[in-house]
Length: 346
Length: 243
Image (cartoon, rainbow over all chains, first blue to last red):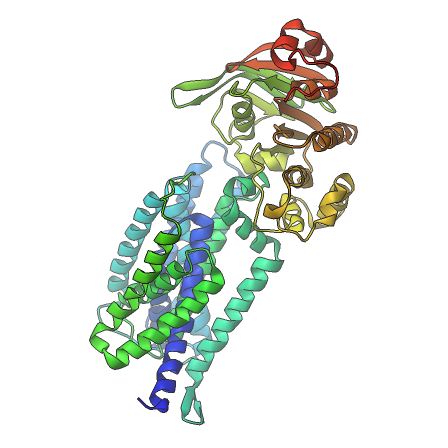
């Protein structure tokens, strides 16, 4: 093996690993705050990617309509819960965030889709659409189950994943799509060629990680999210609503998922069901991080990316197998470190 | 004068087992009320239910409002605070962050002055403000739990076994601070196994046995009651602790 190939594979691995890192961080965040293992994370990736690609190609993405439908559903849930004590201001707020907002976004999407919007507009619209879907899904599928066990939440999560994947087929068809590069052009440094797209991936990943670090370390809402993750009852006694923390966590996860999708879709052709495998690789990283450690998850994601790049070069048929096999030694080590299975307390 | 907290005919059950039966109590403004009783009498259960952690059958009003439809967070926002027995701190966060989060529902500008008041009440917390809550001693954690609850500007603070497992000198400190809270206009509902210490500082007292109140009245009268003295204060000599 020569150095050029090795460098090339490492570079490729880091680009993919950066994406897995973002997804892994989102998984850890959602699990820590809401105890939901977010299987539909991969669908946020495909929805983001394919919404972006559709918009860039001048097609109307079905996700914008889904957002409105889910928003109306979420508003219905809010109304039902508040039925005994109808509170004007709360209902107005729910109406604006759950119905008016997605309706306005839908109108904008229809308007822009007809005239092939510039890349920046397509990105913003895609992010907003998927963010709303994430937020409303939490309201409809997870918030009513917030008090149940991790297993029930996991089953709901699998259900949401299957539903979103089916809807993805309906919206985008079975054909794969590619989107335009976020940043065109490239330059060469020694033997390595850096494309604008891969630089964007590095830049955005680093910016997001730093941003999240600042958010959790310095802002009151970031600290409230951490507090909910550390001690749910303690957080409630401090007046922090677990539903608020859950909403913020899902909002961040769906934005991160959609952003990852938008970053990948210029490099790889994505299909309606591609997100699941991509999300699973983020999940491998999150598991290596024990579903709690952010830095370990980020490092593990880079390892996953590099292992994937090398195995697709040497044994491309087995590349997924090799990546997922990474889990076995980690789980073995973890089971040796903590032999007793702890019963869930809350 | 109407009571700040009023509980009427409350029942709390874990499944079919009733842990609290037909309990009524009142806490007035600027008052320390204590509930004493043996381990397992239902004291913690009652506090949890008043806070909204457990479902309660019966009527609870706070500052004149019925709490039935309000969840924990709403009760906190109304000025009801609970320092639970297990303290429920954010152990991986530092003292200052724990306190800051206690004022989550309070305006930022007011929270700044609240934190200074809490530090004045518990100077030890100021010394440890950058230390992780999980690394504090038991007494310091109790102070932090009380400080965090006070950051929410409660009108009534419910304390569940604040002296449990703490050294006598720290217990004395905590009881002194409870009386200072009354002076500062915060009512306190104090649940204690350390009946002697609790009755000394309380205005009103209730004695709980097997889920029911068996005695109630002025704390000084309860302390003088022979049956209470025999069951809860022990036959100890003066100055000796019950625990």
